[in-house]
Length: 289
View (cartoon, rainbow, N blue to C red):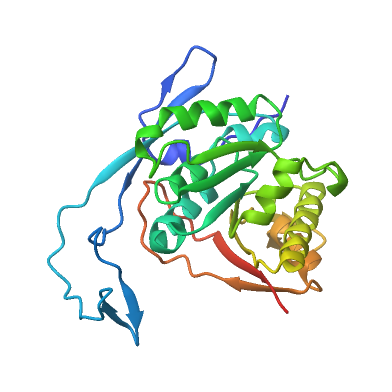
């Protein structure tokens, strides 16, 4: 049976060790972003940092960077339908972005779609007090996410800040559980990493995005969706060129939606250890009224 393997394992040493169930445990090292004094509320006024009383905040000499580790149990190689059991580069890029925008994310309810082994949700829970981590339950992935949450509970802003739910993109809306619908309605931000790799799943993901925006409009609670992915290039005779067919398929299918799609430059600071490929893409999608 043909298997695929994430490239990141060959590029970076994650101090990986074998575990009894045939999977591996890897340590994803990171540095914390600079912290603001816990008693100080920073606002931005004309680009100037001020405290909660409106006084100018003077930038002080940076202290030594604090570091940490997210421990993730995962598979090293899988068949295509089980790629969620691995860690992919888009999840690390999305974790970087959340760290970069941690002051915003700390006040938001976060929903992750197609979370895989849960790395991005765990990174979000370091700052946000309400994270819901979802995926389709194949290959025991939901239990694996729960195990990975337990590996990292000391990192979280508050205990029990992550809930795990099943969310199958192919499931019709009428079959969504009440808990899932409530989660969708309550979330502010939706994040998804490397979920665009198959036409059928991409179509289903687009339908899910439609549902998110429609329910947000219905209850007048806007949603922002962040998508991180790595373009996968192939040479095709039809195009006589090297193309990224999955990403281009997503763009074609999204072209006539009432969405605003913005590209986010991927030059924001890097907090996690991995090779940041030039083929990585970050998208911000909102409903275009």
